[in-house]
Length: 467
Image (cartoon, rainbow, N blue to C red; front, side, top):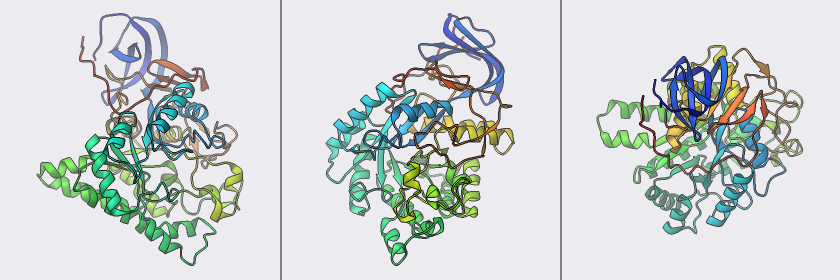
């Protein structure tokens, strides 16, 4: 174990996940960063958590907090509150707000909102458009965590489906070194599948936004990026076919001795959502079984075989991380005629707690849980978080693994007032710390809004001090 000889600002004591295993130790914190990990540390403030489990807090790399412009569904104050209660210390917010993040002024407005209202740290994706040149891309890259390209699943003015335009944008973004999150669905295939079909249910939605539409889009991006080697992150993978493609590529690269091939695949990452892992096209809300719109998302909920394939891919590393794609809509919107129902569902408050329950029941191992929620997201997006190690941000959660409960719509804190995971089991963190600041105590928010700091994907220098 490492550490400094000085007295720390704050010390937490408990069963810490450190260096791949659980150890009884203290974490010493100075100026929001971990400065010591030892059996005994002196601190101005000290909190003994006994034998409760202390993990690095989660990072949610895909949320839609809807602010500005869509605040009846969610906002940064409430969304970040839900994140903190769910053990998430950092969120990366998507750009399809009103107005969308297509200019520096739009991005600066969102940063200003979050600085005043967020309980947790945050980063923002920008939205590249056909009118942008390298100068505007570079300017956005200075504040943005990355860029989001919607190949489908957005309004027509926000989508990029033309192959020449994809080439141009990916080439420019690659020069900035920033990551590109891809909503991978082939809009032309979707439009073709839609002909003559008025969707009435989730099965129809699945047919229209087919597995092949997702697979086609992923192949197109991989082909384009073979020329530019940009950092590509595939959002919300949903199908077995997509999993098998990525698995085959990783296997092929692992068998080759080509450094260039290894570098290229290391620049490719992916995520899966809880709803694609745990729900299928047969989903219905327990309280509203006649309203299939509650399960409408893009890409769609698919078949049980896809769900199984996605879970195995998360466990074996084919898929890198879990992200909620928290995209809430109101109950009134979700109860509309299916064709008019907007796609998306909430998830930021329940994602990690559900997986802590899964951990309790031995369906995932602790190192893998920490990897998919904390360590790997931090690596992919260049955050100084995700590990309990000296020099990292002191983003921590404290868990009583015996404190399991059922998720209830009446008890989640979403502005939309519902959850698709009604009656799923969960273990909510008792405490959440963001850079050493307690924001959740005894499962209640105690931190003030405005604590969160902007993350741009430029990690600070790691401490190399050791005792």
